[in-house]
Image: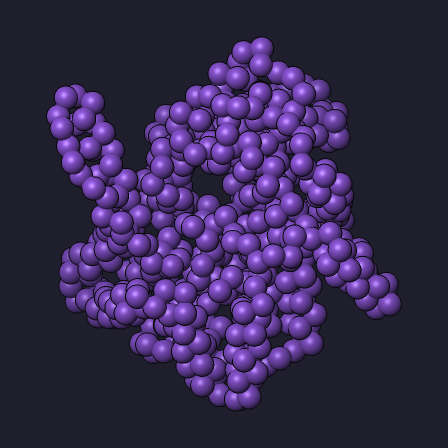
Length: 481
C-alpha cells in the first residue's frame, strides 16, 4: 500500500477520522499504534509477529538499560551493546546473508572448489533499514542519558511503527518524536494547509518528474553495453534527478501526512542541488540518515577531533556504512566510498580555496564562482548516481570504458517524448521552486500571501499533475531499502 496509491488515502481517511474524534492523547496514541501495525500487517502479514517481537524486545531492553545505569553501569553498557548488535544482526541476516553466501560461493568456485549453495530466499521485513536505525539510536540515547526509557508500550509502538515513515523514512529520533505523543493533537488550519501543500508537492515530484524519467533511465541502465557514453552520461544526470524527486517526493508526502496528524516529522531534504561541495551535499541530502550516521558512527569513531588522516578514515568508514545500509550489492559500497572520497577531497580543498578567496576577495561572493562549485559538485554526484543505479560492478566498468573511450555520439532519445516535453518542463518548475526556497524563502507561487493567487496556483498545479503526470501508482526507489 504505497503512499501515492488510492488504497493508502482510503486507509488514511479512516485513520484521521477516528484519530480526531477523541480528545484524549492516550486514545490517539493507541489508534496510531493499532493502525500502524494494521498497515504493516496488510503489506507483510507473515512478518508482523516478528516486527511486534522486535518492538517488545527494544522496549524491555531500554527499560533495563535505564534501571542498570545508576547501580551497575557496566551491565547497562552491555545491554546497550546488545541492543546495537541485535539491530546490526537483524540487518545482516535479512538484508545481507544471501549476498554473503553467494559471494563466498563465487570465491570458492573461483579457486577450484565445486560449491552447490542455493540462496536462502530470505524475505526482508518492510522498512527494516529504517526501524532498525530508529531502534539503535533509541537504545543508545537512553544509555547516554539523552532521553528516558519509554514505559508506555503503546506510545513506543506508535513511534516505531508510525505508518507514514515506515516504508521509506525519514528516520525519526525518539528525542524529538516521543514528546509529541504526550499531548492531544488537534486538527489545526495551519496543519491542514501546510500538510496538504507538502503532499501536493510530493505528488508533483513523483508523478511529473521521477516517473517520467524512470522509463529512460531504465532503458539505459538495464542495457548499458548497448548504449554509448553520451546516453550513459545523460542517464546518470537524469537518474540523480529521478532519485531526488522520487525520494524527496515520498518524504514530502510522509511529512505532510504527519502534519495532518498534528505530528512533526524530521525533514529529509534541503535543496541538495545547490550544494557547493561533498559535505554540504550530505547536509542537504537524506538528512535523517546523514545526521544519524554522523551522530552514531562518525562522532563515536572520533569525528574530526583527531588527526586529519584519522578523521579522513572516519569519514570513509561512515560513508561505506552508508553505502552498505542501502543494500547487499557492491555498487552501493562503491557509491558510499565515492561520496566519502568526495567529502575528503572537499575538506582538503577548503584551505587552498579559502586562501584563494582571501587573496581575491571578490571570489567569495562572486555568483559565477559559487555556480562553478555547485556545477562541479553536481557532476560528481551524477557519477555517484551511476554507481547507485548500476545493476552490477561490471556495468560500472562498462560505463567508465565508454566514457574514457571515443564512444561519444548522439544520446539515445527514442520513445522519450513524455520525458523531453512534460518531464523537462516539470524539472524546470522544480528548479525554480528550489531556487526560491534556497534564496528567497518559500516559493511565491505556492505560498502567496494573497489567498486568491495561492488558490489559483494550487489549482493549476493539480491540473498540471493530472494532465502531465504518470498517475499509475508506481513504487518508490527507497522502499526497497
